[in-house]
Length: 156
Image 1 (spheres, helix red, strand yellow):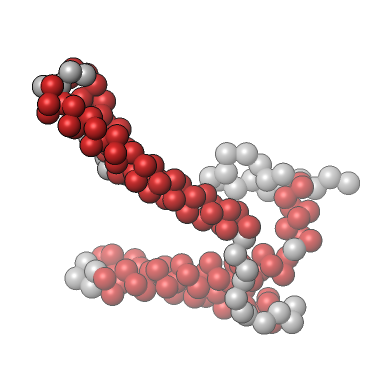
Image 2 (cartoon, one colour):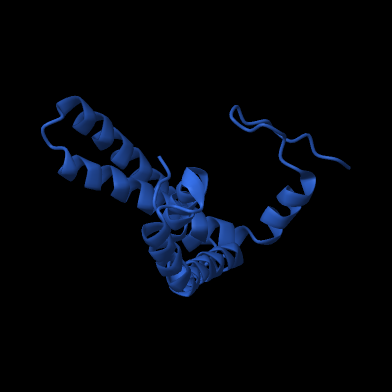
């Protein structure tokens, strides 16, 4: 028997039945994650209220958001309690660790590339100064672009 899945206004595609099955199979984890998200949303609203206290309209709006998110937090926590699940830390999802590893690897290679290429820049600078740009303006411009890229600077 196939379920008719509700559609959500902002989703580009309907939720797959496989995802729904996974969600139901891991409902405790989803509820715990949902609790953390509600708490974080309320916290962000409160932090913004403290950051921009002079913006009265914004503070009123954020107050309503914080109140609503805390209500949701309480509702989800009641469900967790009914299921005998204690509110506690939630393990980071594996994609987060993978993404962090990729970022660290990219930083490492950028650093390595910058160190390894330093002698090349010195030789090119020396040659440009000694022979009055034998590589031409086009190469000199390319060198600047590569240098900025290696240093992680904006090219504009």
